[in-house]
Length: 466
Image 1 (cartoon, one colour):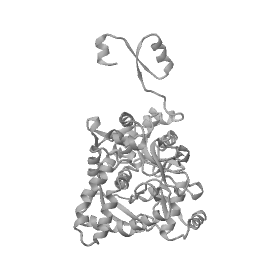
Image 2: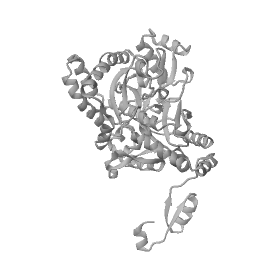
Image 3: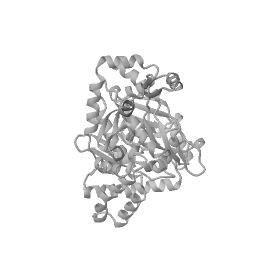
């Protein structure tokens, strides 16, 4: 009930729950103020009651979110995957999302694995690459099991260059591939000659030049860049134009001054980053991975530390349930499509990039990025509404990531699985869309909700653990 209504003396009835009751009042010309309310997700009532009685979760969440917010991610190096990623072997290929086998792999995962095998020289043709993957000639493992994240298919092969991101205030380290740009690229499942040639250039030129540049300019404070970029219209997931520009500004002196690297290579790298608005995405993801790993392993915590998709399954993990995945079928993205492509061409949701939403960016920060709707669909007002709704299911506001359009309120951060099932509000994700068939690539971008089934499973499991 508003102050104006009280002053005017107009009777107002607050309603919640069953809509037919509100309608009955409206039919009688009674002014109502409807509250959005729905019962907890089916099957979670006893688990929610047990968690409330245990009086553990709130304190555990305070510890977990404090650890997440304490991380200070710095981009410090570019190295070869097999040399730095824990557990990486010469025949291991990392992928996005929960654990997966070749038999259950979506088209984009299969296409990206084919391309990676060609890139590694382990196969001479797409047909041979598919045979190797099918009979188990390689090991598939989730990026998240190796302190790594990868957008879309998320494939990381042994000799690929990866960004190394360290916690300036701790001992954590995370890794991510370097961003290829948009269109026909490996992460969207494309594997044509132009894809392999680009990957080879990234390994031979981009990686070494960036490593040399970082030695010249020193560590890059990613949190500071992301915070600035939010003030400039980015969301940290599908719009990274400002962040990439800021990164290039930091790297610029090294690209100009560092004569230990051939001038032609430095020029190529400058032009590549300048022409790739999404270059910063992978670094934002690595920064997010660093933060959620710090928050993991707090007994009793319902804080979500992973949201990831492999094109077949959507999976989450909680701080209080360790490495256990809770999965549901990956949904189809509602979005805008390129050219003649339609939803019929779309693969279900895919990628580790939902790590950005897990740390208060992407779909959780859309209010900071009105222009994002031109890429993923919706309206500017809808973007603000989506961000406001995410405060209902999070435990904190990010002190560094602030939204000008909301009077510099911190982005909603720290998804609480119990609040998701209590309110029925599902985490919002903005994302790219890959073609369902291998070898084609990107077909659009849009919006999707994390499946409620993942959260109901997680809450039940958490209750059993306390």
